[in-house]
Image (cartoon, rainbow, N blue to C red):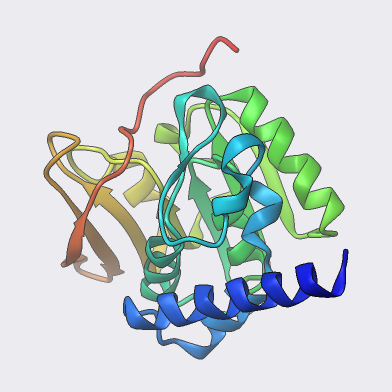
Length: 218
């Protein structure tokens, strides 16, 4: 890479971090994790030159890579600790899982599209992210064999928080997910599991692809 290209990339990354802060991503650990994981590694093809813009981008299988500020806000809301085990539903490009891997002890990520899991695993290997386990399966059921989880992040919208996922959350654990009955009216919420039940907190309006049951034929 030429000196000019390196300077241009450095400037784009600086603008990228500034955009995160301006959208409310202020937690130092989250910002450090997002600075350490290059979004450009997860965006391919004609959209590669837009990897450092704060916008969602199309990926394979009709899915999207979320805009960085939303990834940051979800990560910040989850308040992931260094000893936590995290479940992510909706691997997609693998970007969110990679961010989480910088904060947690272990990350399990599930996607219904085998191709997306395979491609994400390739990036994880290239980046030497050894604490991520990527699995192809029906994310709506979670991973009961690995439960309970300290944190759960869902990157697709359901009408309500899925019961199997709530059941796999530890007492004191946090789940962050979008909920809504359509793709135009959704809210990002934070669910805390208490000894006596669940506490729900609405964070902001969002727009995500729907959470679909089953495993895709691809």
